[in-house]
Length: 94
Image (tube, rainbow, N blue to C red; front, side, top):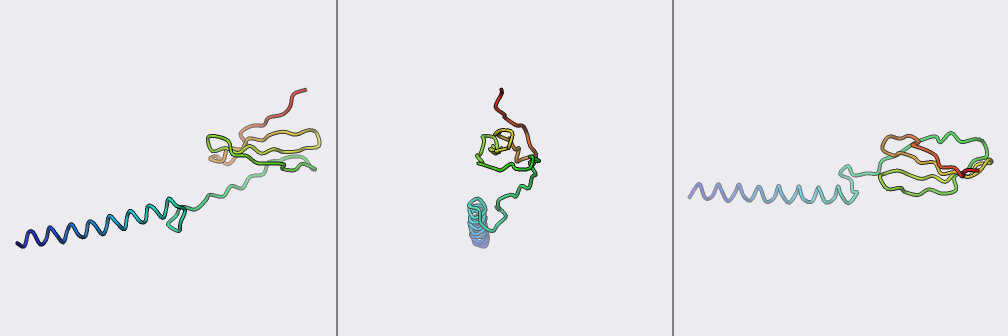
């Protein structure tokens, strides 16, 4: 009888621990307080004077496409957000 009582108490503790773990994972994945915040990226695009950002779009693979209007013509600067650097640039050919 003591073994059965210990087994029931042990299973009850496992059920409570599993429920707490499940709730913590759900809160974390939903972007709550448990550490699932958004990352910040600070990056200088090093564009000439008079340039302005006209638009930003997400690119597949975790990159950003930044449409930059410059005095010498528009271009799209590709930013690798994982490495925090400019990955490339697309310009119109002449």
